[in-house]
Image (cartoon, rainbow, N blue to C red; front, top):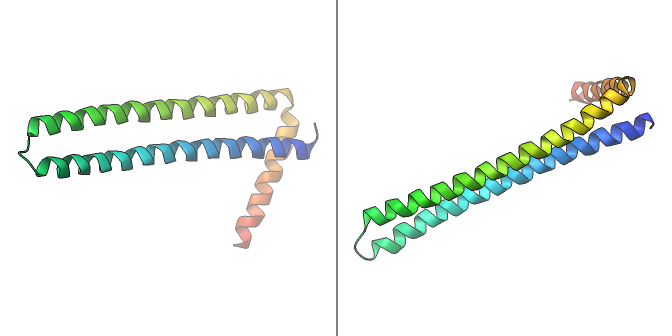
Length: 118
């Protein structure tokens, strides 16, 4: 494998991990928005009649528990995917450490030049 192929592999792995993290954070953000919308709906629908505080409290507790489970599952999935990608990179680095060092140096040098220009 040549150096440019190695850099492409590192870029693809980093891009994949970043995309998965963004997707997970977006899903959690959507769940929070849905939760807030559900709360607003409960308050407005209950306000037209007699408020049953116990029922509202029960509904809110149930929704919070559901969202916690969903957020935990999304977080665990993201962690699992990142660990898998990291293990792939780790095995590659152990197979050919000098190429990994060279690629890391080249990427660092390139980033340093780009940052210095700004």
